[in-house]
Length: 320
Length: 242
Image: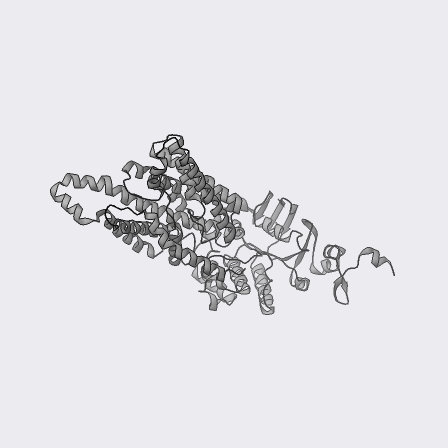
């Protein structure tokens, strides 16, 4: 993978930019009160940069892994309904079980995502055709979304709906370092384990029978990928909410760099996902002062045309 | 002389009853049988795919215990479905059949299957016949001791039917066992041994000559010899009446 060093370099550059922009306010503070400027950097801006980069990487790598597993370029955390499931789990934990520790909330998110992905495996199967996968994913996402609304509406706290909007719409503003750690530590471990499965996932691209004849265990592999993806996505959603389409775009671009190999695309997809989400969050900061645009809006605006394009080209090329 | 391939009690629930099979190195073996008889299941069982019981030894090694790279040297399997989802180049698909990178070996099989023209094209854009040849090349690449091919001659034009049969013979000569399922009974004379599968078990096992004359074959396929060709066999009640 010759493109990976270049991607990592680009990632470092975008992350630095994300951390320091807007630069003028930071420099001004640096002159007036260096200690406060340092605090601004470490307490406010660092968690945001870490979360944007980490969540982007999670969406990229889990999207690539789910696509390889389901043999479908449209499978991704949002389209399989797992992001919605994670939100449902987190809302249940936060508003109904009174969970406040970020790590416990991440656990609830991971449990919700696991349940939806397992449901998808049962409903659509491992090698589902596109229509089945999309419809099953849509059904699960709608059900999880309605469940989330119901839990919020009936929640003991009267402000649940209002809070949750800020929380679940996909945003990195005002997250603390402990929250970032709760999302990113489990996610990093899960993603590292996913990355180790890149060779068997490439073998799976030749079909389950060829992979099995070469010693891969397709059923076990898909359960592992689903569980690890659910942990990573669930933890991130429990802190930042659901963010759409990065899990679709990043693997799509990464496979252009990996010669079409779905497994070898895992690491580049992580780097591209991180770059994308950092860039999208930078764009959000350009919004007029006093207004906040959820970052999920930007990624959806970028992703929808690509999604439609993939569907249209698939309709043309898939013959057998 | 011990057999290269030993299968003991292999079974796949609902498809293949407990089956024993021994094959020698150098043998080119055909599997025939009516639709749904269990040809694919027997091949998959020998490849260790979703095995519900039994044991397959290749060259004395239990394939279920062999780690992935080693297993690719022991056996390879060509499935009957040739659908490939991802836009991987033909050359890279062949490379996935090798336990470790080996450009010279890839060039060899590309030449053998005359894939030079399509080597850099994504496999999901190739015709079914071309994809079949790419997947045959992948199966041959690692020079495994046991080569399992499900319908290798389907979707191929007459030249490639003959050429693929030659390649299977060459692989067998290089001290492997080659087992291929077929539908076309006219191909059987190219094979050393023919196994007839019917109703999830081995119904007959012998040379092509023996099998073609046997009642088992006629019973399984519901056809009979007629004027040097085949015709649908008449039901027993009609046959007995004048």
